[in-house]
Each structure stands twice: as structure tokens, then as C-alpha cells.
Image 1 (spheres, helix red, strand yellow):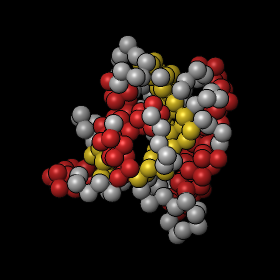
Image 2 (cartoon, one colour):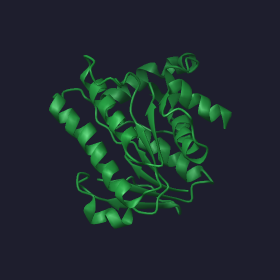
Image 3 (cartoon, rainbow, N blue to C red):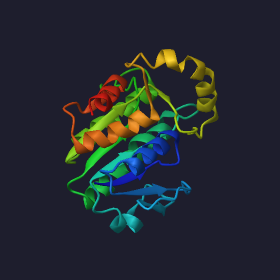
Image 4 (tube, rainbow, N blue to C red):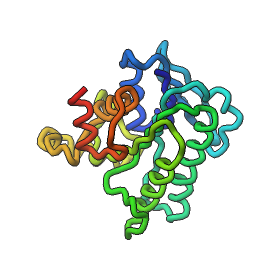
Length: 222
């Protein structure tokens, strides 16, 4: 299969890219970034594009793909609801609409988060916005769409987050990871997440919303 990947410079996206490049069923990967992921591989092609709200200049290069792994995301810390809504709901759905217009038979996978509010009515701002984003994506006429809701994600293979706060958190929790990883409802890692994304495209899943436990189970069964 051919994969389109957004967010390959972030922690999750780096992990997903590693797994895609390792997986024999993935023939090629196109990453779309604002800055280079600085990875070289025979399977990999990169497009540098700065305005993700307008992908029209590169839309002809985004066609012919079987799956899109959307790993872009921003922390809600310090953002107003309007700013977070723009960078989460508006940006994600705009990218999805553009991709869908040139890929009618595509599976779209969105990295959301544990605690997302599908009702869109809860007290937590980020959870409402994520819930709205998920609901909108699930209504789009993709071949399949899956919402991934990981909780704590352990970065493997030397991967680091671009967010200092997250890196500090991972450093603090690293000594406890071997205990935490057995709590499958809360914990997964970048390697497992990447493999799960590939698995739902190649083998499908009855569940459209996948929590950490589901993510871990998909990989264990495959």
C-alpha cells in the first residue's frame, strides 16, 4: 500500500514513519511537512509545504494513496478555544477534505487522544474540540476512517517530542514504564501505535474509535 503521512517530525509521526519504512506491505510513503523530517529511505518522498490550510498547490501530488496517517497536533496549553479549534478541528478537516477530493478509495487514520469527548458538550475544552473533529471525520465518505485515542505513549527508538514539557514528563515516567506498560487501557508506545495504524488499513477493524487497549490488542493479534 501507499501511505500519506502528516506530522512526521513530531514524536508520534516519527514512530509511525519508522514502522511504515520497516513494513513490507508499505510500498511507499509520502510525508508532507513544514520542515524536513531529515530521513532518507528508498521508500520515502517528502514535500515541504508551509500552508496546510491550502494544499491546492500540491494536491496533484497527493493522489493515488491508500491511507493517510494524520499525526499532526498541538497542545491546548496556553491556547484559547478559538485558536485550538482552528489548529485542531479546522486544520484537520480542511486537510481531510483536500485529500478525499483526490483519493476516493482511502482509509483515513486520525491520532486523537484518550479522554476525547464524543458528545462535544463536556467541560474540557480540548476534549470537546477533539470530539467534534472525530465526529466530522467519521461522517466523511472515506473508504474507512479510524480514530486513535492513545493515552500515555512511550517513545522508542531514540524518538523525542518537540514539546519540552512532554520530554520532561517522559523522563520522569521512564523508570516506571515497565510497571505502567501492563496497564493496557492507559499505555502504549510509538512502535505499537505505528504497527496498529498499518494493521487497520491492511486487515481492517470493526471498531472505529480505538483506545490504548484496542491499539495494543490489534498488534498482539497480528
